[in-house]
Length: 159
Image 1 (cartoon, helix red, strand yellow):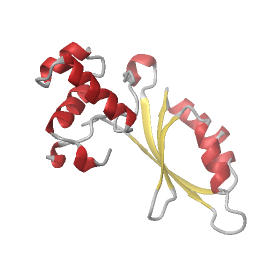
Image 2: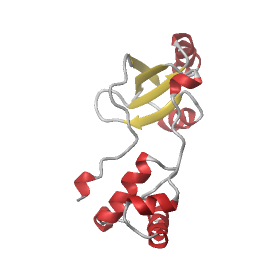
Image 3: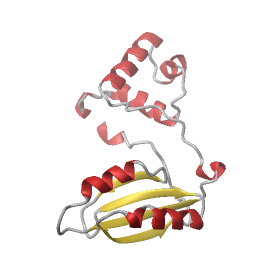
């Protein structure tokens, strides 16, 4: 479903579901001023088209014992056999990495790493990341305070 095919009602449905993915269809329909059947049809269409990718419970990392958040940039060797495929496969298996992006600029990857503490982070770096072939540089920034954190995409620009 291309972005220009999202009408105002679709955007309102998406905003409500981003705020509370557990809304019943009845409650969602009331909030977006639709009857339940058309509301459900629209939600199903948004799911089929891939606009709604998945539903998930968002956990508080502190409440599950993962109090340290780090952003790690990684640079890979550019000469010889490129280790990119091996690196990206390895990242998929590291539960500490909750997001990883291939980047432009000086570094090749940006990883969001959520761990228990500095000791856990050190083990991750020493036993996993630095053992990957081709890793020539890493830089870490630790989060001191979460100022804003949301999973909701800004849909107002689609109006």
